[in-house]
Amino acid sequence: MGSDYYETLEINRNATDADIKKAYRGLALKFHPSRNREKGSSETFLQLGEAYDVLSDPRKKATYDKFGEEGLKGGIPPEFGCSGAWSSKYAYHGNPGKTFREFFGGDNPFADFFTNDEPLQFGGLRSVVVKTQDSHIERDMHLSLDDLYHGCTKKIKISRRVMNEDGCTSSIKDKILTIDVRPGWKEGMRIIFAKEGDQGPNSIPADIVFIVRQKSHLLFVRQHNDLIYKAQITLEMALTGFSVDVETLDSRLITIPINDIVHPSYNKVVSGEGMPRSQDPSQRGNLIITFEIQFPEKLSAERKHLIRQALTLKD
Image (cartoon, rainbow, N blue to C red; front, side, top):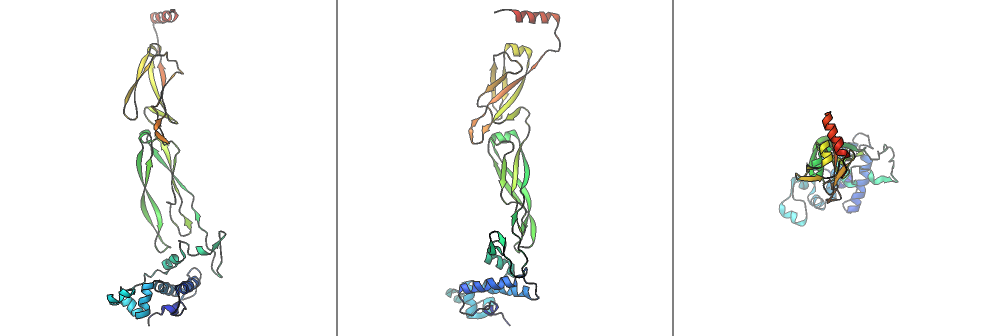
């Protein structure tokens, strides 16, 4: 014998949409498997889901009211569909938990009954777990100085646990996260992907946080928005002057003349040749050239005399 959806929901055939919702709400809570452990409750819960799925849909309800369960599931001539009836063959998806969640909204089927962040108790219903977010997950993202100078796009594949449609089981799935690195980003910059961690039935997925870690560079050391370049020079160059050729991160060769006497603490500042500023990449820090003076390991007596003579001469 076929099902009587009205009888299943304990309502009459004149029930309004509000009556249907009210009836399903009460009975579904009563027979939900996490509350009702009695024999046959799961079957009743399934029947309630199917009854609500049909009677809450105007087209399915119209077909059921006119042609019964046989017409609903066996199909009716298409011309009858013009009146708003469901003309295709109907089959319930068989997942009453999905119907329940769609009715109440959200992953937590009892979320409507939370007040002041405390879950209510339904008679013998066990306590409902309040969802809390998992602790955030931190991962280092190593970038070259060139990446941070020019900017780039990084694609990072993560594997995470994702809840299946039944709301109970889960599976591992891959996802690609895209990070657009802006010119001028610094060491320690944090990029947050909200709720991209593992999913669980009673928790909010963790945020995934990527932290910028700058790789070392062969020529430059970064200091905030400035670039430090160390030039090795001889004592002769330090005393008589010279020029330094520096290849920049954007592949330009710049020549900096040094006309001062270079001492160990002497620095040459070249404005606007440092790192881009992240707020405004058109503005740049400075290039700071430091010097390492190479002294001769030994001098002959004659050379010492000449140096002494040169240093004691007055202009």
